[in-house]
Image 1 (cartoon, rainbow, N blue to C red):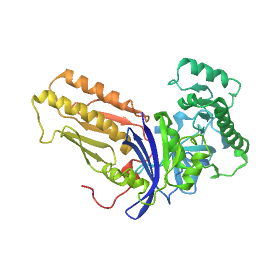
Image 2: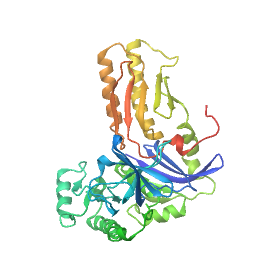
Image 3: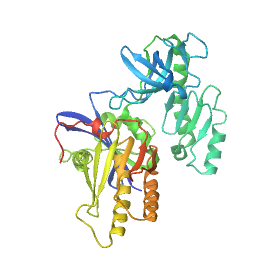
Length: 395
Protein backbone atom coordinates (compact mmCIF):
# COMPACT_ATOMS: atom_id res chain seq x y z
CA UNK A 1 0.00 0.00 0.00
CA UNK A 2 1.47 3.37 -1.08
CA UNK A 3 0.51 5.67 1.79
CA UNK A 4 2.03 9.07 2.39
CA UNK A 5 1.60 12.12 4.60
CA UNK A 6 1.80 15.69 3.29
CA UNK A 7 2.41 18.63 5.64
CA UNK A 8 2.28 22.21 4.38
CA UNK A 9 0.79 25.63 5.04
CA UNK A 10 -2.15 27.09 3.14
CA UNK A 11 -4.06 30.37 3.36
CA UNK A 12 -7.84 30.02 3.53
CA UNK A 13 -10.03 33.13 3.81
CA UNK A 14 -7.01 35.21 4.92
CA UNK A 15 -6.09 32.77 7.71
CA UNK A 16 -2.96 30.64 7.59
CA UNK A 17 -3.41 26.96 8.38
CA UNK A 18 -1.02 24.07 8.73
CA UNK A 19 -2.54 21.18 6.78
CA UNK A 20 -1.65 17.58 7.62
CA UNK A 21 -3.03 15.17 5.05
CA UNK A 22 -2.91 11.39 4.83
CA UNK A 23 -3.15 9.92 1.33
CA UNK A 24 -3.95 6.23 0.95
CA UNK A 25 -3.39 4.95 -2.59
CA UNK A 26 -3.32 8.57 -3.84
CA UNK A 27 -6.72 9.35 -2.30
CA UNK A 28 -7.16 11.78 0.59
CA UNK A 29 -8.16 9.67 3.61
CA UNK A 30 -7.65 11.97 6.60
CA UNK A 31 -6.88 15.64 7.05
CA UNK A 32 -6.23 17.92 9.99
CA UNK A 33 -6.03 21.72 9.83
CA UNK A 34 -4.76 24.00 12.55
CA UNK A 35 -4.49 27.75 12.66
CA UNK A 36 -0.75 28.42 12.88
CA UNK A 37 -1.45 31.20 15.39
CA UNK A 38 -3.46 28.97 17.75
CA UNK A 39 -1.67 26.47 19.99
CA UNK A 40 -3.24 23.08 20.71
CA UNK A 41 -3.35 22.00 24.37
CA UNK A 42 -4.16 18.34 23.65
CA UNK A 43 -1.77 16.17 25.69
CA UNK A 44 -0.63 18.98 27.99
CA UNK A 45 -0.30 18.13 31.70
CA UNK A 46 -1.35 20.59 34.41
CA UNK A 47 -1.81 20.86 38.15
CA UNK A 48 -5.53 21.56 38.37
CA UNK A 49 -7.91 22.45 41.16
CA UNK A 50 -11.26 20.70 41.64
CA UNK A 51 -13.86 23.48 41.58
CA UNK A 52 -17.03 21.42 41.57
CA UNK A 53 -18.08 17.77 41.97
CA UNK A 54 -21.36 16.64 40.40
CA UNK A 55 -22.46 13.33 42.00
CA UNK A 56 -25.31 12.75 39.51
CA UNK A 57 -22.88 12.28 36.65
CA UNK A 58 -19.96 11.18 38.85
CA UNK A 59 -17.74 13.88 37.43
CA UNK A 60 -15.70 16.84 38.55
CA UNK A 61 -14.90 20.17 36.94
CA UNK A 62 -11.21 20.93 37.22
CA UNK A 63 -9.70 24.39 36.72
CA UNK A 64 -6.32 24.23 34.95
CA UNK A 65 -5.84 28.01 34.74
CA UNK A 66 -7.86 30.90 36.20
CA UNK A 67 -11.30 30.63 34.55
CA UNK A 68 -10.35 27.64 32.35
CA UNK A 69 -12.53 24.65 33.23
CA UNK A 70 -12.14 21.03 32.16
CA UNK A 71 -14.27 17.91 32.63
CA UNK A 72 -13.01 14.89 34.61
CA UNK A 73 -14.98 11.63 34.74
CA UNK A 74 -14.56 10.18 38.23
CA UNK A 75 -15.36 6.70 36.89
CA UNK A 76 -11.90 6.57 35.34
CA UNK A 77 -9.89 7.93 38.29
CA UNK A 78 -7.75 5.19 39.86
CA UNK A 79 -4.49 6.43 41.40
CA UNK A 80 -4.25 10.17 40.74
CA UNK A 81 -1.13 12.16 41.49
CA UNK A 82 -2.36 14.45 44.28
CA UNK A 83 -0.66 17.74 45.13
CA UNK A 84 -3.09 18.82 47.87
CA UNK A 85 -5.77 16.53 49.31
CA UNK A 86 -8.07 17.34 52.21
CA UNK A 87 -9.46 13.83 52.78
CA UNK A 88 -7.30 10.82 52.01
CA UNK A 89 -8.82 8.46 49.47
CA UNK A 90 -11.61 10.90 48.57
CA UNK A 91 -11.65 13.73 46.05
CA UNK A 92 -13.22 16.96 47.32
CA UNK A 93 -13.55 20.54 46.13
CA UNK A 94 -10.31 22.58 46.20
CA UNK A 95 -8.13 19.47 46.03
CA UNK A 96 -5.22 19.87 43.63
CA UNK A 97 -4.18 17.04 41.31
CA UNK A 98 -2.28 16.34 38.10
CA UNK A 99 -4.41 16.00 34.96
CA UNK A 100 -3.77 15.63 31.23
CA UNK A 101 -5.97 17.00 28.45
CA UNK A 102 -7.29 14.03 26.46
CA UNK A 103 -9.91 15.78 24.34
CA UNK A 104 -10.09 19.31 23.02
CA UNK A 105 -13.07 21.56 23.55
CA UNK A 106 -15.74 20.53 21.05
CA UNK A 107 -18.60 22.89 20.23
CA UNK A 108 -19.92 24.12 23.61
CA UNK A 109 -18.26 21.36 25.65
CA UNK A 110 -15.19 22.01 27.79
CA UNK A 111 -11.96 20.04 27.27
CA UNK A 112 -11.81 16.59 28.88
CA UNK A 113 -8.97 15.62 31.22
CA UNK A 114 -7.73 12.36 32.73
CA UNK A 115 -5.62 11.43 35.76
CA UNK A 116 -4.10 8.57 33.76
CA UNK A 117 -1.12 10.42 32.32
CA UNK A 118 0.34 9.08 29.08
CA UNK A 119 3.77 9.81 27.63
CA UNK A 120 3.75 8.72 24.01
CA UNK A 121 6.35 7.80 21.45
CA UNK A 122 6.14 6.15 18.04
CA UNK A 123 6.66 2.69 19.52
CA UNK A 124 6.45 3.12 23.31
CA UNK A 125 3.84 4.58 25.68
CA UNK A 126 4.22 5.02 29.45
CA UNK A 127 1.06 5.36 31.57
CA UNK A 128 0.63 6.21 35.26
CA UNK A 129 -2.56 4.35 36.22
CA UNK A 130 -2.79 1.31 33.96
CA UNK A 131 0.35 -0.34 35.31
CA UNK A 132 0.58 -3.38 33.07
CA UNK A 133 2.87 -4.32 30.21
CA UNK A 134 0.71 -4.23 27.10
CA UNK A 135 1.79 -5.27 23.62
CA UNK A 136 -0.20 -4.59 20.45
CA UNK A 137 -2.34 -7.57 19.46
CA UNK A 138 -1.76 -6.68 15.82
CA UNK A 139 1.76 -8.11 16.13
CA UNK A 140 2.22 -11.84 15.62
CA UNK A 141 2.69 -14.13 18.62
CA UNK A 142 6.42 -14.59 18.08
CA UNK A 143 7.06 -10.83 17.96
CA UNK A 144 4.86 -10.22 21.00
CA UNK A 145 6.76 -12.80 23.04
CA UNK A 146 10.09 -11.35 21.92
CA UNK A 147 9.11 -7.81 22.95
CA UNK A 148 7.73 -9.09 26.25
CA UNK A 149 11.12 -10.62 27.09
CA UNK A 150 12.95 -7.56 25.80
CA UNK A 151 11.09 -5.22 28.16
CA UNK A 152 10.66 -7.59 31.11
CA UNK A 153 13.24 -5.74 33.22
CA UNK A 154 12.13 -2.25 32.09
CA UNK A 155 8.64 -2.46 33.57
CA UNK A 156 8.30 -1.08 37.13
CA UNK A 157 5.36 -1.12 39.56
CA UNK A 158 4.95 2.65 39.45
CA UNK A 159 4.04 2.90 35.75
CA UNK A 160 2.52 0.96 32.87
CA UNK A 161 4.16 0.26 29.54
CA UNK A 162 2.53 -0.18 26.12
CA UNK A 163 4.36 -1.29 22.99
CA UNK A 164 2.58 -0.15 19.84
CA UNK A 165 2.23 -2.02 16.55
CA UNK A 166 5.04 0.11 15.11
CA UNK A 167 7.43 -1.39 17.70
CA UNK A 168 7.63 -4.37 15.37
CA UNK A 169 9.27 -2.20 12.69
CA UNK A 170 12.11 -0.79 14.80
CA UNK A 171 15.49 -2.19 15.80
CA UNK A 172 15.99 -2.93 19.51
CA UNK A 173 18.32 0.04 20.02
CA UNK A 174 15.76 2.43 18.46
CA UNK A 175 13.00 1.21 20.77
CA UNK A 176 15.25 1.43 23.83
CA UNK A 177 16.35 4.96 22.90
CA UNK A 178 12.73 6.07 22.61
CA UNK A 179 11.82 4.29 25.84
CA UNK A 180 14.63 6.08 27.69
CA UNK A 181 13.58 9.47 26.33
CA UNK A 182 9.95 8.95 27.40
CA UNK A 183 10.94 7.47 30.75
CA UNK A 184 13.09 10.55 31.49
CA UNK A 185 10.08 12.85 30.88
CA UNK A 186 7.86 10.70 33.09
CA UNK A 187 10.50 10.46 35.82
CA UNK A 188 11.14 14.21 35.87
CA UNK A 189 7.45 15.05 36.36
CA UNK A 190 6.98 12.26 38.92
CA UNK A 191 9.84 13.67 40.97
CA UNK A 192 8.88 17.35 40.95
CA UNK A 193 5.09 17.69 40.58
CA UNK A 194 4.45 17.90 44.35
CA UNK A 195 6.66 20.97 44.58
CA UNK A 196 4.87 22.94 41.86
CA UNK A 197 2.07 25.44 42.34
CA UNK A 198 -1.54 25.13 41.22
CA UNK A 199 -2.15 25.79 37.49
CA UNK A 200 1.46 24.95 36.62
CA UNK A 201 1.89 23.36 33.21
CA UNK A 202 4.13 20.38 33.93
CA UNK A 203 4.39 19.19 30.35
CA UNK A 204 3.66 20.69 26.96
CA UNK A 205 2.97 18.19 24.27
CA UNK A 206 5.21 18.04 21.24
CA UNK A 207 4.23 19.77 18.01
CA UNK A 208 0.77 18.62 16.95
CA UNK A 209 2.02 17.33 13.59
CA UNK A 210 4.41 14.96 15.42
CA UNK A 211 1.51 13.52 17.43
CA UNK A 212 -0.67 13.34 14.31
CA UNK A 213 2.02 11.46 12.38
CA UNK A 214 2.47 9.01 15.24
CA UNK A 215 -1.24 8.23 15.21
CA UNK A 216 -0.99 7.35 11.50
CA UNK A 217 2.07 5.09 11.63
CA UNK A 218 -0.09 1.96 11.77
CA UNK A 219 -1.18 2.91 8.23
CA UNK A 220 2.21 1.81 6.87
CA UNK A 221 3.43 5.26 5.87
CA UNK A 222 5.98 5.21 3.05
CA UNK A 223 6.84 8.93 2.89
CA UNK A 224 6.23 12.11 4.89
CA UNK A 225 6.56 15.07 2.53
CA UNK A 226 6.85 18.68 3.65
CA UNK A 227 8.05 22.03 2.32
CA UNK A 228 8.42 23.48 5.83
CA UNK A 229 12.07 23.56 6.97
CA UNK A 230 11.15 23.50 10.68
CA UNK A 231 8.88 20.48 10.22
CA UNK A 232 11.49 18.71 8.09
CA UNK A 233 14.19 19.29 10.71
CA UNK A 234 11.94 17.81 13.42
CA UNK A 235 11.14 14.78 11.26
CA UNK A 236 14.77 14.02 10.45
CA UNK A 237 15.78 14.08 14.13
CA UNK A 238 13.37 11.35 15.21
CA UNK A 239 12.16 7.89 14.27
CA UNK A 240 10.63 9.33 11.08
CA UNK A 241 14.03 10.27 9.57
CA UNK A 242 13.90 7.55 6.89
CA UNK A 243 10.40 8.62 5.80
CA UNK A 244 11.03 12.37 5.65
CA UNK A 245 11.18 14.05 2.23
CA UNK A 246 11.74 17.79 1.70
CA UNK A 247 9.83 19.26 -1.24
CA UNK A 248 11.26 22.29 -3.01
CA UNK A 249 9.88 23.70 -6.25
CA UNK A 250 9.44 27.42 -6.92
CA UNK A 251 7.04 26.84 -9.82
CA UNK A 252 4.62 24.44 -8.13
CA UNK A 253 3.80 24.51 -4.42
CA UNK A 254 3.36 21.28 -2.45
CA UNK A 255 -0.25 22.23 -1.75
CA UNK A 256 -0.94 22.70 -5.47
CA UNK A 257 0.86 19.46 -6.37
CA UNK A 258 -1.57 17.47 -4.22
CA UNK A 259 -4.57 19.75 -4.83
CA UNK A 260 -4.98 20.18 -1.07
CA UNK A 261 -7.06 23.35 -1.10
CA UNK A 262 -9.51 21.90 -3.63
CA UNK A 263 -9.75 18.59 -1.76
CA UNK A 264 -10.22 20.40 1.55
CA UNK A 265 -13.05 22.51 0.17
CA UNK A 266 -14.61 19.32 -1.20
CA UNK A 267 -14.47 17.74 2.27
CA UNK A 268 -16.42 20.67 3.69
CA UNK A 269 -19.31 20.52 1.21
CA UNK A 270 -22.67 19.07 2.21
CA UNK A 271 -23.08 17.01 -0.95
CA UNK A 272 -20.87 14.01 -1.77
CA UNK A 273 -21.42 12.30 -5.13
CA UNK A 274 -21.12 8.52 -5.52
CA UNK A 275 -19.97 6.68 -8.65
CA UNK A 276 -23.45 5.22 -9.16
CA UNK A 277 -24.93 8.68 -9.61
CA UNK A 278 -26.42 8.71 -6.12
CA UNK A 279 -25.18 11.16 -3.48
CA UNK A 280 -24.91 11.83 0.25
CA UNK A 281 -26.05 14.94 2.10
CA UNK A 282 -23.96 15.45 5.26
CA UNK A 283 -25.28 17.97 7.78
CA UNK A 284 -23.55 18.51 11.14
CA UNK A 285 -25.60 20.02 13.99
CA UNK A 286 -24.81 20.84 17.62
CA UNK A 287 -26.25 17.53 18.84
CA UNK A 288 -25.42 15.06 16.07
CA UNK A 289 -24.57 14.60 12.39
CA UNK A 290 -27.28 13.66 9.91
CA UNK A 291 -26.46 11.85 6.65
CA UNK A 292 -29.05 11.27 3.95
CA UNK A 293 -28.49 8.74 1.16
CA UNK A 294 -30.22 9.87 -2.03
CA UNK A 295 -30.50 7.83 -5.24
CA UNK A 296 -30.74 11.00 -7.30
CA UNK A 297 -32.31 10.69 -10.74
CA UNK A 298 -30.53 7.44 -11.46
CA UNK A 299 -32.57 4.24 -11.02
CA UNK A 300 -31.29 1.36 -13.12
CA UNK A 301 -33.03 -2.00 -13.62
CA UNK A 302 -34.46 -3.82 -10.62
CA UNK A 303 -35.11 -1.26 -7.89
CA UNK A 304 -34.40 -3.66 -5.01
CA UNK A 305 -31.00 -4.60 -6.43
CA UNK A 306 -30.19 -1.02 -7.35
CA UNK A 307 -31.06 0.38 -3.91
CA UNK A 308 -28.94 -2.29 -2.23
CA UNK A 309 -26.05 -1.46 -4.54
CA UNK A 310 -26.36 2.27 -3.73
CA UNK A 311 -26.62 1.61 0.01
CA UNK A 312 -23.53 -0.61 -0.03
CA UNK A 313 -21.61 2.05 -1.93
CA UNK A 314 -22.89 4.68 0.50
CA UNK A 315 -21.83 2.61 3.54
CA UNK A 316 -18.21 2.59 2.36
CA UNK A 317 -18.26 6.29 1.53
CA UNK A 318 -19.89 7.21 4.85
CA UNK A 319 -17.12 5.42 6.77
CA UNK A 320 -14.58 7.28 4.63
CA UNK A 321 -16.26 10.65 5.23
CA UNK A 322 -16.35 10.10 9.00
CA UNK A 323 -12.55 9.76 8.93
CA UNK A 324 -11.97 12.52 6.41
CA UNK A 325 -14.16 15.09 8.15
CA UNK A 326 -13.35 13.76 11.64
CA UNK A 327 -17.06 13.53 12.43
CA UNK A 328 -17.58 12.31 15.98
CA UNK A 329 -20.33 11.66 18.50
CA UNK A 330 -23.74 10.50 17.27
CA UNK A 331 -24.35 10.05 13.56
CA UNK A 332 -27.78 9.23 12.10
CA UNK A 333 -27.93 7.82 8.57
CA UNK A 334 -31.07 7.63 6.43
CA UNK A 335 -30.29 4.87 3.94
CA UNK A 336 -32.65 4.16 1.04
CA UNK A 337 -35.47 1.90 2.22
CA UNK A 338 -35.13 -1.75 1.18
CA UNK A 339 -37.80 -4.43 1.16
CA UNK A 340 -35.95 -7.49 2.42
CA UNK A 341 -34.31 -8.49 5.69
CA UNK A 342 -31.47 -10.11 3.73
CA UNK A 343 -30.62 -6.80 2.06
CA UNK A 344 -30.51 -5.01 5.41
CA UNK A 345 -28.27 -7.74 6.88
CA UNK A 346 -25.88 -7.36 3.95
CA UNK A 347 -25.84 -3.59 4.46
CA UNK A 348 -25.07 -3.90 8.19
CA UNK A 349 -22.19 -6.28 7.45
CA UNK A 350 -20.71 -3.88 4.87
CA UNK A 351 -21.10 -0.89 7.19
CA UNK A 352 -19.45 -2.64 10.14
CA UNK A 353 -16.58 -3.79 7.93
CA UNK A 354 -16.01 -0.26 6.61
CA UNK A 355 -16.13 1.28 10.10
CA UNK A 356 -13.60 -1.27 11.39
CA UNK A 357 -10.96 0.31 9.11
CA UNK A 358 -11.05 3.46 11.24
CA UNK A 359 -8.36 3.80 13.93
CA UNK A 360 -10.78 5.97 15.93
CA UNK A 361 -13.41 3.69 17.53
CA UNK A 362 -16.50 3.80 15.28
CA UNK A 363 -19.50 1.58 15.98
CA UNK A 364 -22.77 0.77 14.23
CA UNK A 365 -25.39 0.61 17.01
CA UNK A 366 -28.65 -0.43 15.35
CA UNK A 367 -31.55 0.72 13.20
CA UNK A 368 -34.18 2.83 14.94
CA UNK A 369 -37.90 2.05 14.65
CA UNK A 370 -38.00 4.62 11.86
CA UNK A 371 -35.31 2.69 9.96
CA UNK A 372 -32.47 5.15 10.62
CA UNK A 373 -28.98 3.78 11.21
CA UNK A 374 -27.23 4.88 14.41
CA UNK A 375 -23.44 5.20 14.42
CA UNK A 376 -21.15 6.53 17.13
CA UNK A 377 -17.54 7.67 16.73
CA UNK A 378 -15.26 8.58 19.60
CA UNK A 379 -14.62 12.29 20.09
CA UNK A 380 -10.95 13.24 20.22
CA UNK A 381 -10.36 16.34 18.11
CA UNK A 382 -12.57 18.97 16.55
CA UNK A 383 -14.41 18.00 13.36
CA UNK A 384 -13.03 19.46 10.15
CA UNK A 385 -15.82 22.02 9.82
CA UNK A 386 -14.82 23.44 13.23
CA UNK A 387 -11.11 23.40 12.39
CA UNK A 388 -11.77 25.52 9.30
CA UNK A 389 -14.73 27.82 9.88
CA UNK A 390 -15.65 29.28 6.51
CA UNK A 391 -17.64 32.50 6.25
CA UNK A 392 -18.80 31.81 2.70
CA UNK A 393 -21.25 29.04 1.80
CA UNK A 394 -19.93 26.12 -0.25
CA UNK A 395 -22.15 24.84 -3.04
